[in-house]
Amino acid sequence: QSALTQPASVSGSPGQSITISCTGTSSDVGGYNYVSWYQQHPGKAPKLMIYDVSNRPSGVSNRFSGSKSGNTASLTISGLQAEDEADYYCSSYTSSILFGTGTKVTVL
Amino acid sequence: QVTLKESGPVLVKPTETLTLTCTVSGFSLSNARMGVSWIRQPPGKALEWLAHIFSNDEKSYSTSLKSRLTISKDTSKSQVVLTMTNMDPVDTATYYCARIIGDYVVDYWGQGTLVTVSS
Image (tube, rainbow over all chains, first blue to last red; front, side, top):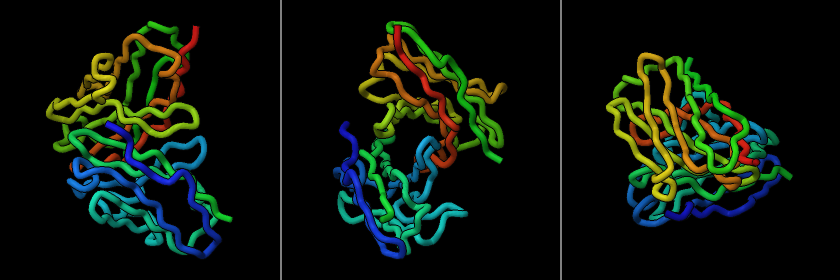
């Protein structure tokens, strides 16, 4: 199975909103509401930010939100802050777990 | 407090077998609808799921690596073990173990362990 497709990079200025897409197929993203998003700072383990498409774990800022339309899921970060600069990965259930190609978010 | 910690060799030679151990605390490997996944990340590259094992001993493996992987658990020791045979330099990566719950959500991650494959 091929990895889910994400843009290599997305950037924005502090305070702006950005959206990261995650494109799969009807066998993964489109077939289940089991999409998660992870944030990874350099040299650190990933951190769960969104699960089941749009749910936030306790402790995650409400500036992070998730959605899905068809075979594409999206992560939106509103009120962009310097600390949001990191790599972001989506994942989807597909009889196992499939990760995305990763997106580097840069805060200008 | 849920924690996971990976342990194993930092350096293996090509063709050797890698054995990694994940020791968990803060939850039990017998908890219903919970399990442990192994995920790796080559330097500068994306995450790749390898395998998982659930409390009912249900196991699943990456299709591309299935022939080389074995996952098992020792509930009494709170440990999950992953073995990968015939290691190659392209297998150089940080290997993470992580808790997986219910709807295949990976909610807690270990710190990861960098494994280098080199002669």
